[in-house]
Image 1: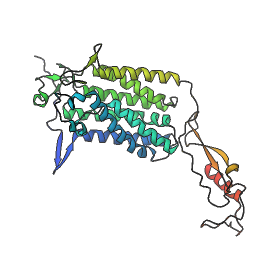
Image 2 (image 1 turned 90 degrees about the vertical axis):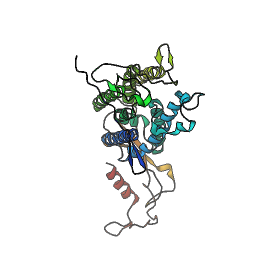
Image 3 (image 1 turned 180 degrees about the vertical axis):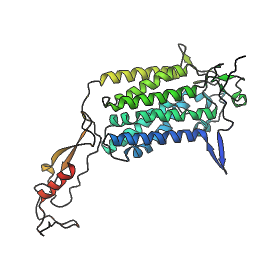
Image 4 (image 1 turned 135 degrees about the vertical axis):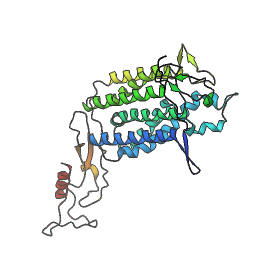
Length: 355
């Protein structure tokens, strides 16, 4: 008989630090977020963006993403919590640590959090989406290992050497080995992230086109991996299907087509994207004029943004032509010779700093 290997499932998915439970599922999600933020921050700074921007946006993105992921799961698997034969109490719909996050809802609502942050800062959502795309794929690759520790979302029975062992006491699964779909998707996402980074280095995919490539690539892999799974999405003891395809396969098809349409429709778009937000003009300081009609718009290119379409942001510079007799604001208005500094001198200094 040929020697058949297999992948053992972990004996534990929860460890206790005193009374505090440390759940592997949560650790995988947190680690994925950390890696995605780290990579996104590096890529954003490389495009000339302000340091710390991705870190700030991660807060609303993660909060919205967790809510969206859980909502998608509860909506599509509502029978698990609210049906007449539901195996769980309704309150369990809030127990996110037990597993059950739909990536479709997490990305959709997480994008809303990013959009709100980008709008507040005056930067382009499309530029940020392209920056974050590889990191999101890596975060998904890491997060899938949480399913391994929970012994969930595996595929059909198989005798392949890399078949996954499942504890039959976990959910009554018969003895045998199963397709490790968590591993398939993890590896697929890592390869996808690598491709996105390589393609993104050429700097030709802007205006959300790299993110569209991520969506198309992920949904392509998710379609065939989802076809291997046997978890009852949409039902209690069976998966809801339509024309022989599972719910998540139909979702993958719709998003794949939508991503390709967007990718094609924006192929000639070359308008500037805002990477560096415009600095606020408070109207105070030496030589400031109360009349804003004379403000001169200045185009300030982002660091590293010399490529076409990379970005230029409008900035207003006031103070030229202001009154020499403006009141001091706590700093000396005199030059080296003790004479009052002219507003035009201040303007020249501003321009030297902007150069």
